[in-house]
Image (cartoon, rainbow, N blue to C red; front, side):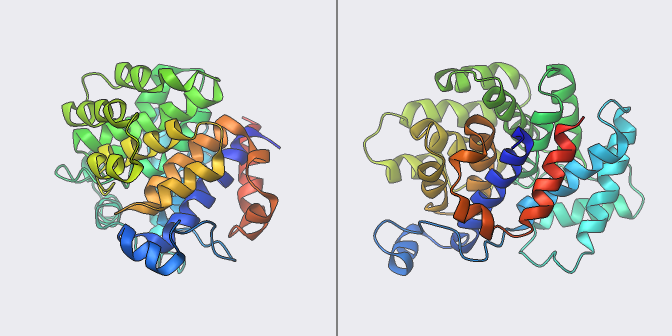
Length: 302
């Protein structure tokens, strides 16, 4: 199986295990699923707008061509986002900023002006994993495309930095970079974009050694904004760097935006560990499983 397939299935199943616990605080999660919280995605494993937009972004880059000019790539991504926004499957509580940005673009604003300047929501960071694959050998291009892919809906510096970081962490995972270098390498790569994001990532190192994971997660935030979502996902990865299941379970059992946290973490872990790290039974229950694998194969051929 190809690495892009592992990325897509990994993020989709992370999304799917976190989707039922989004908007539910941890005490409610435990009351519903038991003391250890949710342990596996439902059957079928339905995912949210996070995976839907990730798929749209990947299809846009493929349609334009990975080496196309930035405007051509963004026009293709924008077209895919518009198609997604009108899809009957867009009924999974899509983010207000994503919808507003896409609507602005559809109504004629250029992609670099359509995003909301004041929103630092995680809706742009949750979808950038494919960029980490496509531009894994070109850091400059990776950063350029990740920034643009955020700007079409989210223009706040913290959201932009989070989008760059989420893509870059996939690249680090694909490159077999030791996990103890993730924080510093990501800080260096995103330097100068957002002080808020920089501080959020520094907090991950601060809490990593805490014995109480729930306290550590609370200290990092709830993930509704991009800087927190990436920080929370990275914390889960660093706590369980060699265990896909433990990582996404930890990410899904959080206060706040559980599906986005687990989606980001799941994609990075898929890149790091490969498809075989994800149980076959989980993979088979994943929504649009065959389509995700087919898209992953298309990604692997460019």
